[in-house]
Length: 401
Image: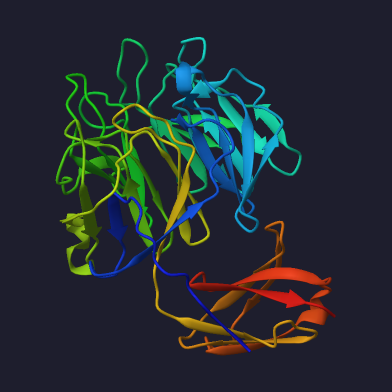
């Protein structure tokens, strides 16, 4: 009988954490993964699809814009180079995933021109497709997020102007529609996060060069942006991402300085209409800017970036909310019935093969602390598998029918 627990915490770099309902004393587990086997880069497009991570674009050493495409498998902790991006290489593009496809919007082309292009990527065919362009000025260093199944993109800048307009793209009908613009003047290098499905936009740089601290909240009733609580400092060149349990705003400049502070915002239910609350802590380790974030499962992954000496990184780091729970899988190796026991109730288990493909999904009856699964009934072949229990614990087991 093998007892499986979450891995011990390894302290790395975190700049901001937004909690849904956990306390500020919550702990986080940081993991350093295999770096991209290429030179470091910043401002890359970074997205997740079907259990894997993908990197394209960004600017490497010597100001060379990258056009390659790499796939990361979290199960094997390995990278694979795929067919290169077919368009003009770019940095500062926004990327996100919807229904098994990735979308790449805008960016600064290696030719020095801003772009209003929209591309989609299908991992099953390793195929890129050029879609309808955004019907607005080309731009880079903009903002994007997913809302109601649509991709929202806008704000940002070109060589001369800053923008505040936002546009919503419907991937089913390949159509763009204007949304309410951000209040005030245009801004760039801003970011968004979603707490309890509520969309917030924060930070960035205005036309005076000021690093902004104001936070905007999407008012669904009035279809407009309303001011929320400010960040404790002006932030730019940061990125943000959220799982179902927590969010992070990672790296960046704080009032034009690399920061040594860890800021923990908490969304209290009693203060829901007032926006997140913030508290500051100190942390050790180097600070970066212009890194890229995305979510895979219960982890938020950070890729690349550069430090205060302009050294660019190819590192891949993840953070997850640490929950002290013990999970047992037995017998292991397994030849038929796999037993799962946890010291806390769980709702669902997922089983993945070594390629990161989901091969089994089963719900717990009445949210129990145990489950028995007939592995042969699912037609699994002999091999090594990864099992995740409610995204709070994971372990490997061998199936040898």
